[in-house]
Image (cartoon, rainbow, N blue to C red; front, side):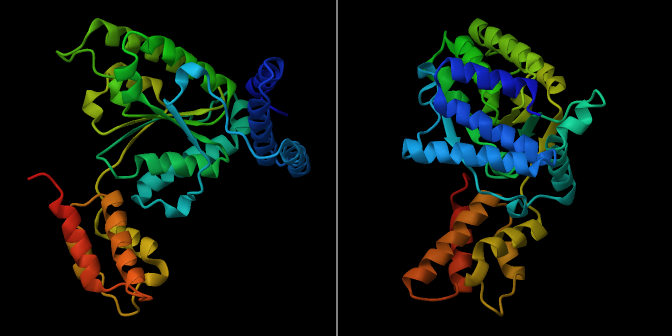
Length: 320
């Protein structure tokens, strides 16, 4: 049976003639039923939605309120859990989030809630956004990225109102909501540069997160956890700390990206050493640079020298 929030979202979208939102929620109901073991019902719901969309013609993107135009980016992600390269302890915690959300009704029957509110911290390129994409893919939900820094700089004085609209969306349209650059609105009130408007925004954010009881996942991502107000920590179900990849993780990132472009007799020792100090994203980009060069030279595998140079070039881009 659909959850109470899903039923309310279906009714709201129907009464407001928001057909695309209605279909989005209907698909979330189908996913929910599939998790509960009601495969036939889930299949029927998907068939009904697919038929309606075919009759309408090309798919229409989910329409957000006008005031959020340009502030929320939506994507359907195709990043599986297997693509995520993180330490085993971190992977176990992410798997736990997925399991709890897939079997949320079992927990609710015992008066417990699944992990829905996550705070991710760590240097740029270490896997925070990718983790959000993985969660969205594994839970069959759309990923909505809120560009917090743009919201603050563009709408100073109106940020609190925008925030309320976003949390209304979180309630009405189930999905994974990623607040990028989260510290822009969640800054520590003890810092000297605090201003009255941002203090009010933070207080509103604390209230919205605490009161949220939707079926959506709320993810805050920050490059520096020390900038986040301490009062927010207890509002989140889990805090995940990301870091630069170790030797084994660097080797896995390179191997995953290379795929069939990996030479048969390729020693990883020197390459892994050359990737020291680089983030997951930087290693990924460097490896793709080597693949591009191989393609342009009509080669079926990369040249080791090309990959080493690409990695060194990425390191050279770091500030002195």
